[in-house]
View 1 (cartoon, helix red, strand yellow):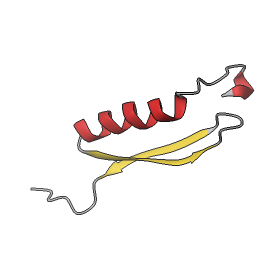
View 2 (cartoon, rainbow, N blue to C red; view 1 turned 60 degrees about the horizontal axis):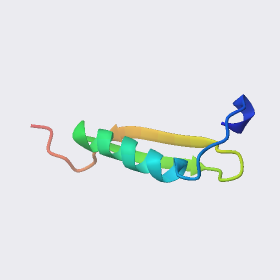
View 3 (cartoon, rainbow, N blue to C red; view 1 turned 180 degrees about the vertical axis):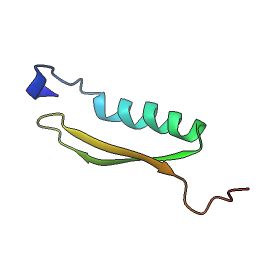
View 4 (cartoon, one colour; view 1 turned 30 degrees about the vertical axis):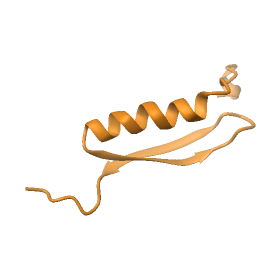
Length: 56
Protein backbone atom coordinates (compact mmCIF):
# COMPACT_ATOMS: atom_id res chain seq x y z
CA UNK A 1 0.00 0.00 0.00
CA UNK A 2 2.75 2.44 0.90
CA UNK A 3 4.55 1.53 -2.32
CA UNK A 4 1.66 3.14 -4.21
CA UNK A 5 1.89 6.31 -2.10
CA UNK A 6 -0.91 5.56 0.39
CA UNK A 7 -0.51 5.48 4.15
CA UNK A 8 -2.76 2.84 5.69
CA UNK A 9 -5.03 3.88 8.52
CA UNK A 10 -4.17 2.49 11.92
CA UNK A 11 -7.56 0.74 11.66
CA UNK A 12 -6.81 -0.86 8.28
CA UNK A 13 -6.06 -4.34 9.61
CA UNK A 14 -9.17 -4.56 11.81
CA UNK A 15 -11.36 -3.00 9.11
CA UNK A 16 -10.09 -5.55 6.59
CA UNK A 17 -10.84 -8.46 8.95
CA UNK A 18 -14.30 -7.13 9.80
CA UNK A 19 -15.56 -6.03 6.37
CA UNK A 20 -14.19 -8.88 4.26
CA UNK A 21 -14.93 -11.45 6.97
CA UNK A 22 -18.55 -10.32 7.17
CA UNK A 23 -18.97 -10.29 3.39
CA UNK A 24 -17.45 -13.76 3.11
CA UNK A 25 -19.73 -15.13 5.83
CA UNK A 26 -22.80 -13.62 4.14
CA UNK A 27 -21.78 -15.38 0.91
CA UNK A 28 -21.06 -18.70 2.62
CA UNK A 29 -17.29 -18.39 2.24
CA UNK A 30 -14.24 -18.53 4.48
CA UNK A 31 -11.99 -15.48 4.70
CA UNK A 32 -8.38 -15.69 5.82
CA UNK A 33 -5.69 -13.05 6.10
CA UNK A 34 -2.54 -14.88 5.02
CA UNK A 35 -0.17 -12.00 5.60
CA UNK A 36 -0.21 -8.45 6.90
CA UNK A 37 2.85 -6.26 7.30
CA UNK A 38 2.32 -3.41 9.78
CA UNK A 39 5.36 -1.58 8.42
CA UNK A 40 4.35 -1.25 4.77
CA UNK A 41 0.64 -2.18 4.74
CA UNK A 42 1.15 -5.12 2.41
CA UNK A 43 -1.73 -7.58 2.76
CA UNK A 44 -2.49 -10.99 1.32
CA UNK A 45 -5.85 -12.64 1.92
CA UNK A 46 -7.99 -15.38 0.44
CA UNK A 47 -11.62 -16.35 0.14
CA UNK A 48 -12.61 -19.99 -0.11
CA UNK A 49 -15.30 -22.54 0.48
CA UNK A 50 -16.15 -23.39 4.06
CA UNK A 51 -14.70 -26.80 4.86
CA UNK A 52 -16.97 -29.40 6.36
CA UNK A 53 -20.11 -27.72 5.03
CA UNK A 54 -22.86 -29.90 3.60
CA UNK A 55 -23.10 -29.13 -0.12
CA UNK A 56 -26.77 -30.21 -0.53
